[in-house]
Amino acid sequence: MFDNLSDKLDKALHVLKGHGSITEVNVAETLKEVRRALLDADVNFKIAKEFTNTVKEKALGQNVLTTLQPGQLMVKLVKDELTQLMGGEAVGMNLQGSPSVILMSGLQGSGKTTFSGKLANFLKTKKSKKPLLVACDIYRPAAINQLQVVGEQIGVEVYAEVGNTDPVAISKNAISHAKANGHNVVIVDTAGRLAVDEAMMTEIANVHKAITPDETLFVVDSMTGQDAVNTAKAFNDRLNFDGVILTKLDGDTRGGAALSIRTVVEKPIKFIGTGEKMDAIDVFYPSRMADRILG
Ligand code: GDP
Image: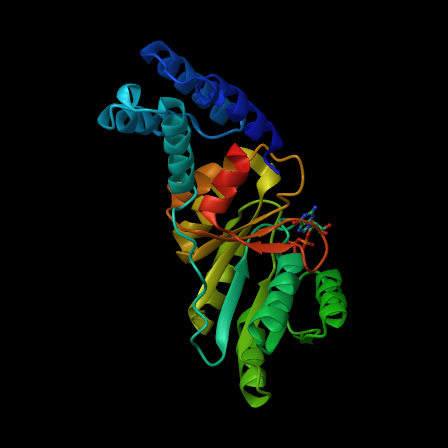
């Protein structure tokens, strides 16, 4: 996860880590390397520039060159900024509703169905909830089947209406079913397309309006780089979602999406997906991730 970025930042900060006293030239050179590492990781140019400018301002403000351990202070400033870039504090989910309704959105292949299963499993095993998974992909029978397989695997009921082509009706019926059967969380898995298109957006916006979810989550494949950020923007414009799920962080993603998305859509990353198995889910803690990246 972020191995490349981690290596590059480590190299960039190496000089500072090893020196008791550093010079203005060291600091400038290091920040240039940090910016290069961020750009290589596919962080957008403006964000990378602002990042290093902020670190520089803070370093000047704290008279970094005259402190006892300037190198360590610089590393700390970079780490703090990285934490801020990824959102600062971890943000939890709103699970107050009875039932709480969670709507999953995102492109086809982003990992929505897999994540729906992981989230249901997480809520069941870690939060003692009784979730209901809802199959709202009316176009692909295989998608319904996939969710049913996942549900069986984790012991969570799946609500589906084979033959019904109205996702608004299905999701509403599912919520009634949840109420009648003591489910306290409803996770609605929706249909995605390969790219953002108007029909998909209208469909999910209609479902969103009809069921007024407590949490609308946007699932995005972190391997898709800057495209991920553009897709996030498109979905956020329509759904004003509550949080982002970054999937496939176990792959050799360059990490730019993870680092840019928060700034661009101003919504927190809530969970990450780190594998295909049902337990490959982690709550996203910006500071822990920054620690990990900076080793
Ligand atoms: P959907 O079309 O958005 O519902 O996407 P799926 O849940 O079907 O996932 C698409 C593919 O990505 C499947 O092969 C999943 O096994 C895989 N996948 C999903 N999440 C992850 C993840 O966090 N890591 C890895 N390595 N693969 C994942």
